[in-house]
Figure (tube, rainbow, N blue to C red):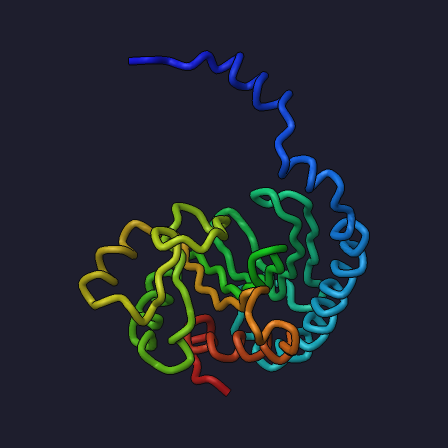
Length: 220
């Protein structure tokens, strides 16, 4: 078997410019507009946060003790698998044994995702409720994470499965190894609907659509 000298191939890779390298080095427009774009993202997340604060007043008593329903948290990063992101968590509850968090993630070049992350002593109940509701219309475009942890966001077939696609047997087989639940609805940034999307309404809608799971109560 022929083996390649990794050191020399690495040096060759780093030293030789290709046409694409030179093209991208001279492409500055995305960096010029990036601050304004991310500012628009943050403003939309702040408006959604304000709406969620109002939305959560009515159900505060149904949430796990210690859940933040007012402050929320906006996080910002430059390199999630190579791409910038902003996220909003509200409500949020992270502890060693409990997760009860609604996370809205804007991932540059990918999507705007609305996700519910759940973990704790009610996990079996959450899965039972999701199994019972998975064929309802509100869940037709909702994905269940099958990753080993809730911090995986790549939309690959082996990592996310439409909840409505699972048979009862597949449902039982696949969820037995999960120690958390993450369900998500996404809006692709390349989709025609992204430009006119009302982030606040879409965010409220997802939260309400998922209340049969998170709160065990009918959608309002």
